[in-house]
Amino acid sequence: MKLGVLFSGGKDSCYAAQLASKDHEISCLLSVFSKNKESYMFHTPNIELTKVQAYSMDIPLVIVETEGKKEKELKELKKLIKFAKKEYGVEGIVTGAIESVYQATRVQKICSELGLWCFNPLWQKDQIELLNELIENKYEVIVSGIAGYPLDEKWLGKKLTKSSIKDLIKFKEKYSFNPSGEGGEWESFVLNSPMFKEKLIVSDSEVDYKNHAGIFYIKGVDLK
Image (tube, helix red, strand yellow):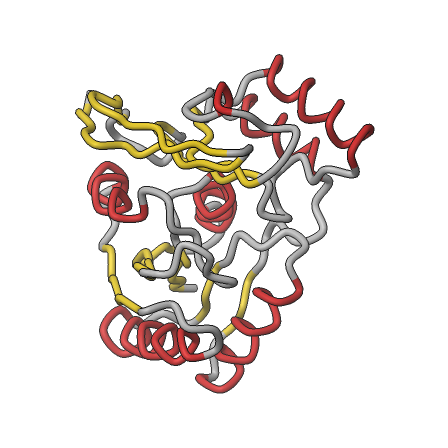
């Protein structure tokens, strides 16, 4: 089956794409460039670098821009998916949703209206198990954004490792924290995965941080 992947460049969409590719053809990646940093639906830190990731994966990337107004941004998403169906012949859409009913139900509704299958390979997956699988599969993931205590500035740009996973488990036990960031606690960016033909290396970056919230802006990348 030909599938399109809702792609943010973060760990969940990258891993969902990998899982879906085992039994299906990934025809294209679909990215929404939202101008609203507080978007309910879409990942925003370093979203423009999905172009570089798509190049490394050798998969076409289709982009739509949106002001990010709640619910209205779904109309742009529907246009994007409709275009992918027409131009790439996709029969289904892959998402990296784990627990977000808000995101999953809205994508499901759009797919239903367009006669497409909605595939959520990570749905209800144990979050610690997910993080460990990323390490086992040689993913290179960095923290691109944080939004709340106990995360602080030192987490921005930090790589996901067995050690950092242990810290996230402690936060889960002490603060009812979603270790995979499903509640918006942290955002990620993938520098390397089994689907990448070339690894991304950060050559320039900038940190914007205040009161346990911030973004790790990637200003430049090289391919190796």
